[in-house]
Length: 125
Image 1 (cartoon, rainbow, N blue to C red):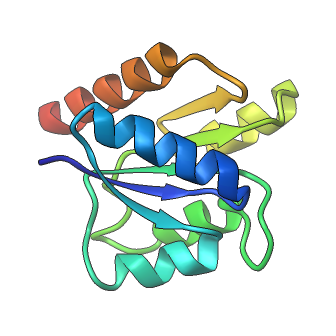
Image 2: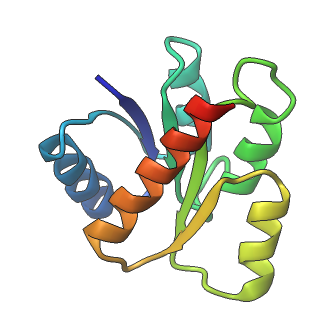
């Protein structure tokens, strides 16, 4: 079963997104911020990370930069999932190594398509 680490500080979005992904057959591990997500990574390596951009304690950009320095973590597909829709934010996220950047709110089909694309790309590498 594919495991996704979902990092989101808004509890309603975290719970709803996790539930929708679980209904699609994914195992979802939840974290409320980048710091919590990093702790989860010490226990297991997920197949994919979906992460909000702006969060307390550690934001998504800081987390992605930290993951890029770790040989095991930098290979994990990473999707930003944020309400920030400015081109500069999207460019910065992708330049840091994110595989995709999705703007909230979005349709479940768009999220699922991004997940499948990132997982397919991971298998090919």
